[in-house]
Length: 400
Image (cartoon, rainbow, N blue to C red):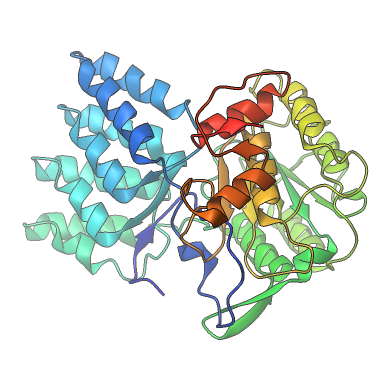
């Protein structure tokens, strides 16, 4: 396990074979960030601007270029590009959905970007409000970043009220949300976390229950759709997150059994049918095997349901453990494709650090690219499969 106190929104890593040894917690995997070229482009565009408002606009444009996230070191670099403390705070808020992981040292480094202790306190409050801290039990390093006892007391008080970020779903910003969860047979794949054995479905159910009880409030409305060969909605529409509804939702989630195929299309169509939905969170470990199974057609349909990307589908590829028939590269590509088509964010959860879609020189990376429909070169091949071309271009490859 990593050292304590890790701040994270999206925990992204990539496809690799399952190990023989017990797996570490997938929530602490941290890879899949923007590559050096992508990040350098962001930095250069921000540096190019003179006025702070233009720098903020440049950061906004950078965030839209890819669904890939930022490492803690990259966050530090971006924040340091801004002169005024208020702009630094704005930058942190803008990057929040894309921050992959930050250790305590990295959080302290961000705080040290500020010259005045009052600004450090504001920055810490912002990061707590944005729920970027996963482990709030070991925050001594953060408190030690402040010099004066009054500031240490203020930091301690802020951290005492911090609610840990959910490592699978991150920080739910939308008020009206639908959680779409894969309960197919492959979700019975197992892995270990600190000696405890989980199935994929058990682990996901635990994390979703945590979101419902510890993150959503009475200001939220929600629904849950589970799917395998077909789909099942918890309620006929979105309902307020009251204490009684939260308890009923937990009962529904804890009743799931991993079985059947993977009908992503039917589940997404159901989720997008609710008139007041503002965001969809789709979690799956596989590729579609029942109903509509063409990933491009599903992505095109989702793009239409998202109403020009105003109702994003945030996707989570949960690939920890191993199941016969797994095609993790194809699963990752499918989830990324859906996020891109709807304006959502994409993340992958698994223990592995290596990212085959980034490793153009490795045989394993080339194989993964081929399976995902990408070629290991940079030649532009924009044709009818525009969605695939964009997905491949995002990782520095062309569509085949």
